[in-house]
Image (cartoon, rainbow, N blue to C red; front, side):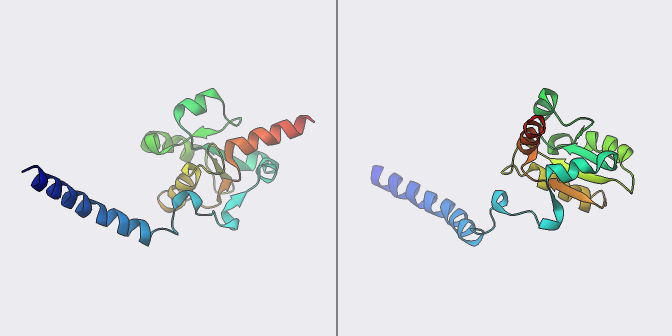
Length: 146
């Protein structure tokens, strides 16, 4: 009886793992956090800052991270509160503005997802992902004081 149970358990595990293994092999080169942002959609902190009032800064981090600190006049817009936060972004946006989306760091994918949604779902143009995210902004601030 015990041997039969063990065989059945192993069979169930094997059947459950087959799709996962197949997906891992098929998508091995499509890991989202490794997918680069096209150069045309990426902006460095110094360039984005040089846009001044022509830039609309969008913080894609969590509400808690935003509350702890954010770029001056940045608006929060994250996946968890997309529907409630998007109207404020749309109200602040105008056609001549460039949107700069950032999240925590270079490895954070939230900024890419939010930028993509702004382009594809909100039909906005000139949407950029900030290179190195919030960490890059912090580094740029420290460099400005030297």
